[in-house]
Amino acid sequence: MVRQTRWLVTLVSVLTIAAMLLAACGPAAGPKTNKLEIFSWWTGGGEADGLAQMFKIYKAKYPNVEIINATVAGGAGSNAKAVLKTRMLGGDPPDSFQVHAGQEIADWVKADKMEILDSLYTSEGWDKVFPKDLLDILKVNGHYYSVPVNIHRSNVLWYNKKVFAANNLTAPKTFDDFFKVAEALKAKGITPLALGDNGPWAAAHLFEDILAGTLGQEGYNGLWTGKTAWSDAKVTAALETFKKMLGYVNADHSALSWDQAAQYVIDGKAGMTIMGDWTDGYFVSKKFTDYGWAASPGTEGIFVMLSDSFGLPKGAKNRENALNWLKVCGSFDGQEAFNPLKGSIPARTDGGKANYDDYLKSAMKDWASNKLCPSVAHGAAAPEGWVTAYVDAISVFVTKQDVAATQAALVKACKDAGVCK
Ligand code: GAL
Image 1 (tube, protein in one colour):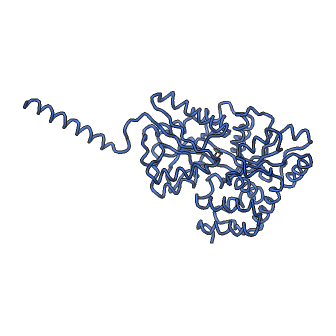
Image 2 (cartoon, rainbow, N blue to C red):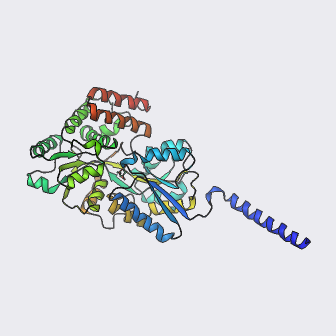
Image 3 (cartoon, rainbow, N blue to C red):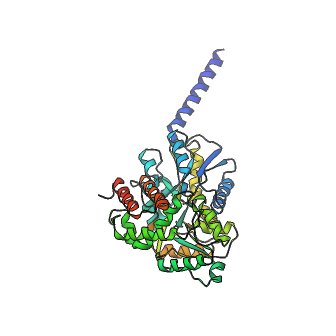
């Protein structure tokens, strides 16, 4: 009996010490679990395929981990962000979530909801292999909080080659060219420009490209730093151009998503669409090859950029699995599998070796040589509150088309963001 008790005491002590040791390792180690929940808005053709490729790589490395693909449809995260907010504030964060590189994550950082990933950057060599421009955008208060998987381009005009050839048209370079082409298409009963802004971000996306095409790189970038006044006559001109463009879009634009608008180009119902290069991923997924592309009007030599990344929220239930996920995201193999299908170029400077199509090859060339502008609709240029105010102002503009009122709203948004006086 005494012996038994002694055994029991020893066992309890051993277990206690083991538990203490485990606790000493702190949240860093985390319990071993067999799940991994990845939260994103990638449901469209191309983007979903790219994500599946990264899952495949993860599964091959960690076959015992079940991946939960938690997606909320809606381009640019228009719906996903609200769901994420509820979960984060309710103490139920996913293990890792999609977030645009740049200011988009800043609010979560401020709320102390994100883990710093600096040591992962060092151990994985990412501080050496990601380009400096991107590293600068990724840093919030001097730290890294997410891992980029790609570089996307916002300012691309896509067109149906057959439609253009049949009407003797070439890709427009300037706004004047654009309106000439648009008139010609309209005369033939073809929608000149397909727009799908059932998520209002898509119209805001179109307008950021018009701003870049009107103000140039320096002028556009100055809008986000306070150097260019939102009351500038060029912003007025950009709004006027936008208004004119809206006269050439499909009547059902507010009922369509970005990919349904791209489908209009595939079907030859529309001649052009201006959208980010996830459209390339969409075309590839639909096996559509008869498309051409050009920088959106006025933006030749400018690359309006954004980058998708994944972060690690504090309190992730499957932290260790999430860390391994982030390693796949930043890895050479992960990015080479993901990007050719996603319609983006790798964030890694040693990437770009796999099978990239002609469009993506041209994007790689432009990324290396063009002047860069950060996208506002996709989180690179401004913090979330400002982005929302900007998107709201443009969404009202699409229906009311009041240039003065919209410009005033944009002026105010910059003031409210604390950037303009
Ligand atoms: C962007 C995102 C892209 C693409 C697009 C449409 O915000 O960066 O990766 O998914 O939305 O969903």
